[in-house]
Amino acid sequence: MANQGLKDAVRRLLHQVQTPGQYLGGEVNSVAKDHDKVRGTLCLCFPDTYAIGQSHHGMQVLYSIMNAGDEWACERAFTPWLDFESLLRRHGLPLYSLETFTPLRDFDLIGFSLQYEVLYTNLLTMLDLGGIPLMSADRTMEHPLVVAGGPGAQNPEVLGDVVDLFVIGDGEESLPAVMRRWMELKERGRGTRQEMIAELAAAFPWAYAPAFYAVDYRDDGAIASIRRTRSDLPETVSSCQVTRDLDAIPLPTKPVVSFVKTPHDRIAIEIMRGCPWQCRFCQSTVIKRPLRVRKVETIVNAALEAYRNTGCEEISLLSLSTSDYPHFEELVSRMAEVFGPLGVNVSLPSLRVNNQLRSLPQLVRGVRKGGLTLAPEVARDDMREQIRKKIRNDDLFEGCRQAFRHGWQKVKLYFLCGLPGERDSDLDGIVDMAEDIARISREETGRYREVVASVSNFVPKPHTPYQWAGMRAREYFDRVRGHMLARTRIRSVKIKQHDIDTSFLEGVLTRGDRRVGRGLIQAWRDGARLDGWQECFDPAIWSLAFAKTGIDPLFFSHRERPLTETLPWDHILTKRDRNFLETEQGKSRVQLELMATT
Image (cartoon, rainbow, N blue to C red; front, side):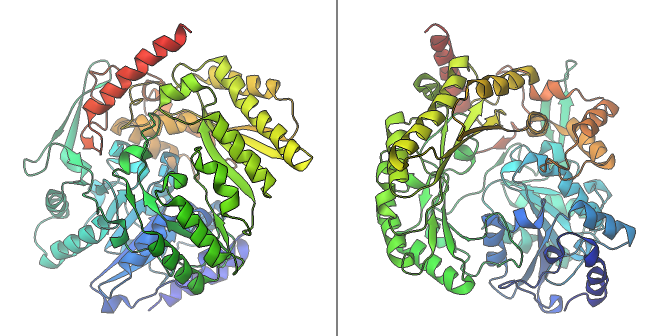
């Protein structure tokens, strides 16, 4: 079953790397099938390190679904760390799947989950190490179909020359459909590879094959038009049709258990998909619509089965806004009732600041407590109105008070800086809010507890009402950091701002078009690797690569765009149409004008 020669060669090298356990596979609940006894093979490729990718819930879901029957063999691969990539290249060994040590080039299909645009170079690394040409046009029928999806694929144009097919929307139903159709086309054996990809794209309205869409540019560099080159393909690509009944989508009750420590070393259960709110900065609330929920008993039973199959001591209840789950109190009470006696911690990583936050500590009494994580995003009421984040400080402070009173040790807050219309008073509010919570902790526990304010540099995302806005300048974000640090007085309050260079790269990649793809490939050839990791990211490589390829990154990241301009992602339709986004953008401008006068 396994490629024993490759496996033995890898084993001989592992003593030279820092984390050998990541590259061996064989974990509990992993599935290794005989390729000769299945109809087709696919490899789920996560373009980041094993520790990050193995923590991703979506990977576990798709792995479970595709391995549920006997039709497919579904395996996994991750981006190797720098030392192991170097060893593979030095010894002429390909990147392989963990289950059977099969080189990526030997699968029928490989699928990339794009969670973050800064991971794009990792995708190139995996293709190249796996023996697959970087450019779609250079591949033959001897190579697998290269598919990509996820939040990082909502603007697919930067990778338009690399990826064969993008899946827009949820993957639980679309991936099996693409796999089945691709194998039918291969088994039929007629036509060229490009003709088969075109036929595949024509079969599904949510499948986007960039090779069959041409882009025209104006003299000023903006896009004039995006047009199809085949009449049998749609002019626009829409999101997948979704299953309204989330209970019909099976949860992974036998998730793969890693042999090494991972950031999210726990069972993850998705309780709800979508968000009832429509915050203007948030791409997820657009692409995850409509709101769908699982039943309480479905969640509890799946969590219990997963616990029995893994022995994990923590269960995380996932959604964009967990406390907006319509049966929240019932669910939290049932989870505490079932898992409290077992000593299993139940974590709620995405709580909305609302009145239910006040009662949360009493609901989870007897369960192990660590930190409380909340995302107020901004600190002043008028800015909340502007971004449509309707929360109340009273709920936030009382919820934190109750948490400290019932044993929570620290609070982490997520904020944004660089939003349209932001003022110094908004930055002051971030520090003031964090310090107010620290004072509450002293009142309740007798000493200041740690409060971390994690501040992200705002990147306007595609398919949101802010998609026409530009990023703030570097000088602005530098000043923001200094302003907040100078204002902080309480030692237990930590202000952490995201790396500015990484945010700027994200802005270029998330808002770029196919021309930026040339800069991406050049940066990768010049050594850009694992750019989401601060110890690996080198902004100088990117600056030089953009210069070599004639790309002005500020044209894509910082330029405010008129409503009349064709955006690189305009032909990709999500759950909210352009009219809704334009209306919301207009309302935002009115509110900004009002804020400026008060």
